[in-house]
Image 1 (tube, helix red, strand yellow):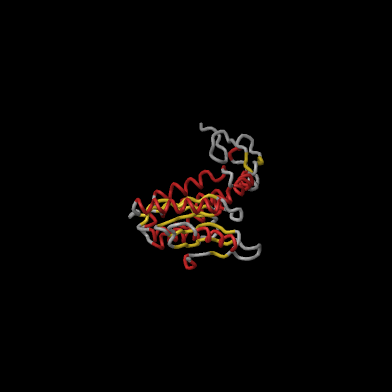
Image 2 (cartoon, rainbow, N blue to C red; image 1 turned 90 degrees about the horizontal axis):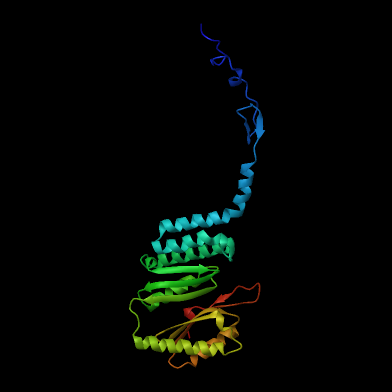
Length: 258
């Protein structure tokens, strides 16, 4: 004789398996041992709070991943490093994200200038300060890349360490170094000039001034010092002139070369 079969077809008529399940609100569960509704911790809310604090880190990682997918290996290192350590750095997540945006925009502009050049030029950005390294075809292209970097919003300084494939002769390089060193010494000795705000590049006797001037008067003093250095053929200011609050900053470009 067969044993009794419960409504659910289970031997012994175990009604626990057929008991109506209580209404369960979202976020709760039924304990399998007792059939009672138990309230769970609001994991979604906790994750939301954590997610809010880390949202910008995730965005940095996403943009960095996009950069990695669309660029050469040299770019991946810079973007990946920025995203990976952004949360732990003194500059903070927001500044790291701003730096990454600057970096990607510079790369985009270099790509538009020359699609092969983007594979030869590396960029690093920290707190708005841009470091350019790598090789370019000639001195004109070297300065063209610097101009592109200066044109990106948020850039505070450009350190141009690019080298041309056809390097100048040793004699030219030596004279250029002497000019740069002398001009640096002159503006450092001028109490009315904040020398730290200027980067000086000399190529075959042409001085390129990069940086930020506190005023037109300060820039005039720097140019005056440059004129008095022996061997200088031309002066090209690539300088932002700091204006009073509420007034947009002016930018001196090669068109205003002296």
